[in-house]
Image (cartoon, rainbow, N blue to C red; front, top):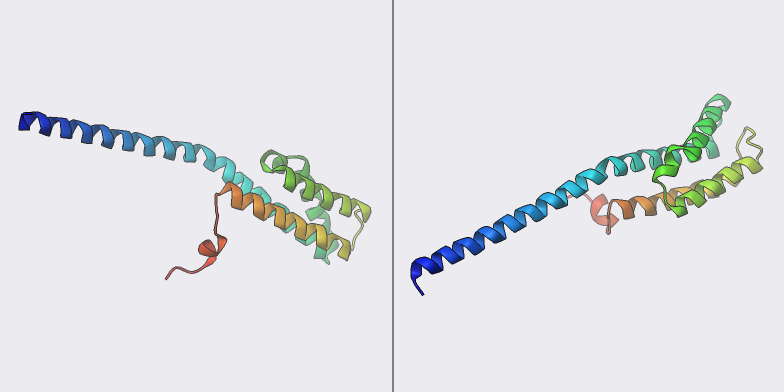
Length: 144
């Protein structure tokens, strides 16, 4: 074969590989960018639900407790339901039932501690899965 033909063939194959690789990464990044708004809201609402459950379990200021209770149920019946999975939904339900078993009365009691911790654990699992974090120790450890 002619050397010029071989060089042209190699250049063509290299161009096809480079173009294919570029298109692959472009589509992959576009797909990730489309997910980011959903994942960001999921992260925001999940952290807020954890904070509210903890506040409801331990808060000693009645006015703050009532505000937290109201916001918890707003998340429960609205935004969190959009971004949660079945495990988080069940944990939210268990916390809501524990809160209702207390008749929603202030001050809170220790019966809310377990459901609050369970909710946090379920949310942690959801977020690790959603954000594709397989090794949390690597994320939490300081970089050398």
